[in-house]
Length: 218
Image (spheres, one colour):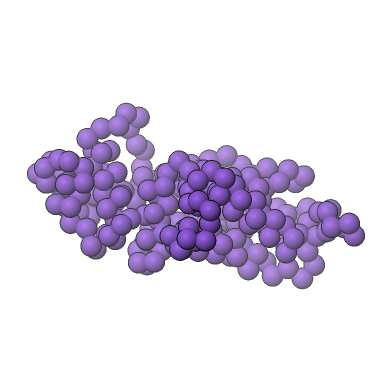
């Protein structure tokens, strides 16, 4: 099984169990950063989005840098717990499908985090590198496991086997507004997410895994 520590790949600090004013401010900041970017968002804009005074924002966070850090901790926690909190299954179980389901769960349960990650990737924020590198580690462990079981197609480029799934996912996140224009309903709906998840998994299986003469994976 692929065993990874979500907190080592996506380092975050512990979060209190109950929502609070701090959480409301942080969540408002998350939404603002996803829409306007970190550099384009002021503490006043966050206060307005959270329906609190700017003084209360400063009381809890002091500076914008500390607020950004709180948002990053939350994002890393969500991503880490979704993709790396439990081991991916070993063959013959379908780890490609399982990892895809974990990614789509973030899109379903935490759309604001998806928006933030997409914006961070475009803006080149430091957290983008942390998330990308963590996902590379998860992906590499998955493909190493498949290779160890003799399931990779001969001649597979292992570097791009690791990177291509991430490009498919992150590219979709960044381009989702454009993609929505070509779908019968928004990508974030359950049916469209399932279609996307299934198509990505099928593409990876057919392109990178060994097949018997009848076209089924070995």
